[in-house]
Structures are given as C-alpha cells and as structure tokens.
Length: 119
Image (cartoon, rainbow, N blue to C red; front, side, top):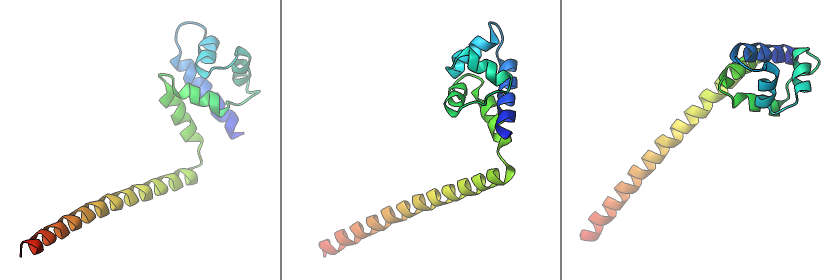
C-alpha cells in the first residue's frame, strides 16, 4: 500500500513540475520507460521501480521526488538513519583527530632523533 501512495505522490510532483508538451511523454522520457508504464502508474496499477525512480531523480525536479520518498519512510527508520549518520560523522572526526595526533607524534620523534644525532 505504501508504494502505491509513493507512486501517486511522484506522479503529483511530476504533474506540477512538467509544463509544456505531453506530461506522459515527458515523464516516460525522464523515467526511461514506456508510455504504458506511465499509464499504469497514473491508474495505480503498478508502482515505480527503483531504476525508473533513479532516472527521475536525475531530472531537474529530482529533489522533490526524493523528498516524496523520504516522506514515506517510517519515522523510526528516519531516526535510525540520522543516528547512524551522526555516528559515522563522529567516527570520521575521531579518525581525523587521530591522524593529526599521529603526524604530530611522528614530527616530535623526528625532532628527537635529529637532536640526539647532533649530540
């Protein structure tokens, strides 16, 4: 059921975004699919496949399509996504800090070696 709502939302967004020319033809060109597929989407007989969705994301109004998908993702999944993203960023920041500390340590060791070799 959720995928049909998502498909309907994508159709609504595309109808608002596509001006001039045949809506069905423009949408079929963007999604790289047949007019029959577009007719099925409009009548809710078929849902958007991922490959076709990715093709729609490449269009100028692709961010609206992505936002429509995001709205259909359950809130608990969105929360887990943000928690995981925060963890990934924290780990990346810690790695950068560790690399800086390693470089500083290596520089101190080189300086100590140079000082010892002078004596």
